[in-house]
Length: 225
Image 1 (cartoon, rainbow, N blue to C red):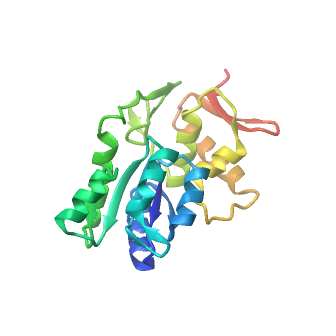
Image 2: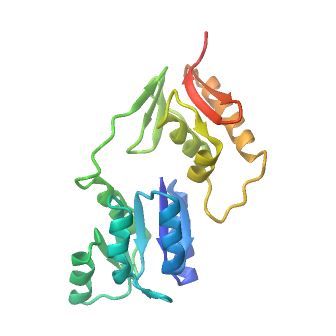
């Protein structure tokens, strides 16, 4: 899952991003509203962490635009503004939750999980293909009931393909979903990642294969006998 962090304090931004990435999330970091707007146009994030005091405005004033652009996004306001009025104004303006700095990293993760469980984010049934099962809610893969252990990017690639099982997924879509905005993707990086995931699926007897589609991208389907 990909999360957008809008935070202008570099230390805080890095702290949040590092903790989220260690928990398996892909994180894009921006420090101003203008860059957040561009990111939201480019990608449909499930959740956004939003500071209030930003160099080019108040995150509170940006909330209506966020809601108009991405109606289903979950917005967690993360700010040092702690008065009761500040919290009420944030929630009334459209934030799904309000977290006051400083905070414990584990609380941030718990708030994200809780926000994604609320009405409007109904659990999605697992995707089943061959002996492989992918839980899109928990972001976990199993083969014949056994956990399939993957590195973060391998898991993101598998999720991207399993969401569209049986259909070709364009290179650009795959790259958008598994690499951050600031990362420069080498020509062979995706090919190597696909090769590693293929090998792990074969070793686990998942009964699926990742096929290259000429000039389009990749698709995952049942392995051909």
